[in-house]
Image 1 (cartoon, one colour):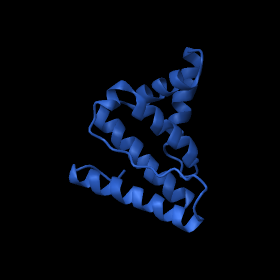
Image 2: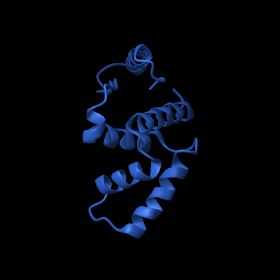
Image 3: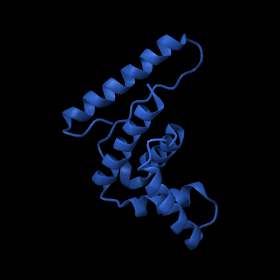
Length: 123
């Protein structure tokens, strides 16, 4: 899967979960900042909120960064109350790259099918 496509799918997941949780991008950015930084500084939080909103609009945002954001969101107590399943294949390096890609695709298919049955957008 290409980086832009993967980023786009992660954008959709994040935005869908924000809608389900009833969170604004600013609220989630504040939660993210608190999770990712040792000290909370209001000026820095504001800058982070603006940076975060821009990242959710850029197709060049790295998928790894978006995955961190999604992981933080899914660990939040409010998100744990949602009926959401996030299937993700984590490569171990013990199988070929083509088989590894296939496992990743299968995980995405399962996640997509499950969420469609719940009338959700593809995650």
